Image (cartoon, rainbow, N blue to C red; front, top):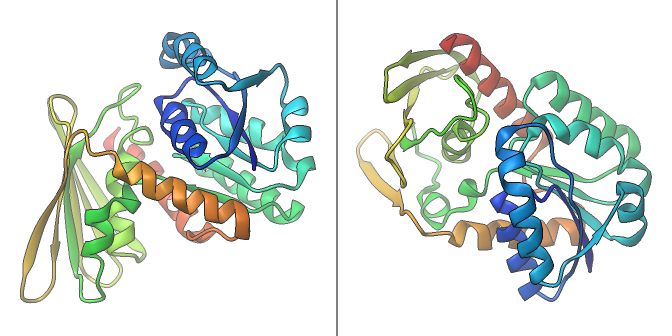
Length: 275
């Protein structure tokens, strides 16, 4: 399969390409980039790494969609995702957009509506939802989830960049509508309380610095179990790439558009509550 990678300013581009090449797929990339400082600081280095891995580059997205069977949008600046997706719609081919789908619910809704209107298979999520410990912890009896996680930010109160990881862990283990939420901000950590419509409460304790691993507890009426996704354990990328490959083949996402949009809307609510 020929797979187009759009946006070589994210470390995820390396993670995805490495695994897709091992599976025998041919990768063609479009450099992309944005004025975002993180994009500018990474794009040349990551582009060079990908070229050393044998990835072919094209100069325009128009060239890319003519050559590929499916696409990965990996641009680190989520504000780029909607425009980049729009340039792929004529191809009618499946698109995976790396987390977050967009950095506003308005843009996320726009992408989803366009995908539906054009009949384009669409998938977007964080790799953390496919971590072995998360998948193994899933069961029907979970009443609440507490996550302790790194909460890196590209700018103050930017929960889209890393907060999405913790939120998708909760969404995977304890799906359901969130009625209200609160955010308490301290110098080194933010504490987010999610009140679900079924009366249960789940939480995220996000550390702005010095924390590498993700930890989470799942609770039912009788027991509580702690799990850890250790620093350096990137097997969740293997699982995600497996899911993406199947999505490209079947054109059916394992994650519903409703769930994806709910994640983005919740991140937006968290941001509004924190400011």
